[in-house]
Length: 241
Image (cartoon, rainbow, N blue to C red):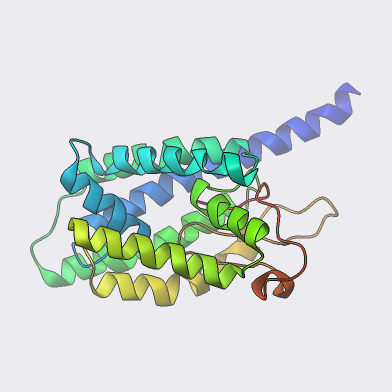
């Protein structure tokens, strides 16, 4: 039994390393986009807007919002995984670390490089910790729970939630710009490119399965879920932020 348990423990350790690496990189690349000042994804527009109004850093707001959203899982009967809890904490800490060490450039071309590197790096980081399959992120669990409870489609709830936080963040002073559009158009394909290359094999030894990603990253839910019919993907398998 001891010999059988050892590979399982080694496998879990590797998944935890992958999860933590992905979460840290995700937060750090968020900071890269913040420091580019060229636009953020909808949730980060909201985070930045709140940070402008509260005596909290950007990363602290990310943690606070993640914790509040996680509380909304209770009436939706969503169950968090270890990746969910670590998501709430690590991404915000990494974002504040990145903002502290990245100097905001003056030249537009340097800020553009920072933005592009942030978007591509964010996609890779998202794929890395989605692929660890250790629990959905709090924001994804929110729309997954709403899909289950209301039977409206993934498309409906993701669009409704992200437009709401984008509008709220913009009104609060968050940065909306070219980067917002770039992120929305490219993050899905970037994650889709990296995910098969870093994803942990599923229970049957296959790579893949129903996934849902962070914020605006990627939805790989089955067609039945997308149309609002049939079973929804599990929130406990490798979803991101």
